[in-house]
Length: 277
Image (cartoon, rainbow, N blue to C red; front, side):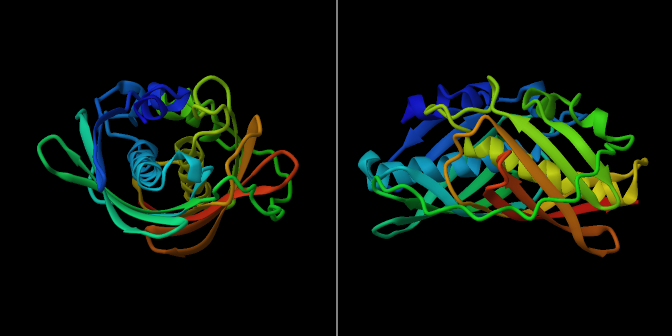
C-alpha cells in the first residue's frame, strides 16, 4: 500500500507520505512544496482533493482486499474550508461504511496546527476483476481555439505546469484544456492517477469561470467540487471541456467533462468557483 501511495509518478511528484493505516482508516502527510502551490504559497486545491481520493482508495483497498480491484472512485465531494499557506498538511481518512462492492470514506485535511483545510467524501467502487461497461460520449464543444490572455499563464504556474496542462480555449464562459500522462500524472499501474484527473477537472472549471470575467486584481478560489470517475483511465492524453451553467454574483457553477481523444467520457463533475471582483 505504501508503494502505491508514494511511488506512483503522481504521488511521488506531490511528495505524499503514508504515515498510518489501520482496519478503519489511514493518515497521509503532504509536506509543503512550492510545486504544489498557487502564487503566494497556498496549497493548490487539486493537491488537497487528491489527498481525499488517495486516502479513500487506501481504506477501500485495505478493507476489500486487492483481489477486489480494479478500484474506481465513483463519486467524490470536496469542500474547501480554508487555505494552507506555506504549511505541511495532514489528511485523516475514516471508513464510514463498507459494502460488498462499495466503500464509503470521509477525509479531513488540516494543517499541522489543526486548522481545517478541506473535507472530502468518497465512494469507491470495487469491480472484482470485471471490466467496466461501455463509456458514453462526451458532449465536447464547438472547437474554438482562443486561449485568451490568461491561457498561457496557466501552464506556467507551479502545480499546473508540473501537470503539463495546456489551455486550448478560454473565452465566453467556456474552457478546453489538455493534459498528457507524461512523467508526472501516472498511477503505479501506468494509467492516469485519479488525483491528476481531479486536478484537471478543478482547473478546467476554474478557467471556465475566469473565461467569463476576464483577468483582473480579483480574489478567487474553488469552493466545492462534485466529481465522478467512470473508469480507470489508461489513455495517453485527456481533453477537458468546461462551461459556466449559472452565475450568482461572485459564485459560478461550472460543468466539466473529461474525455479521451476519441471522445469517450472518463470523468465528469461540477466545480463551484468564486471570483470576488
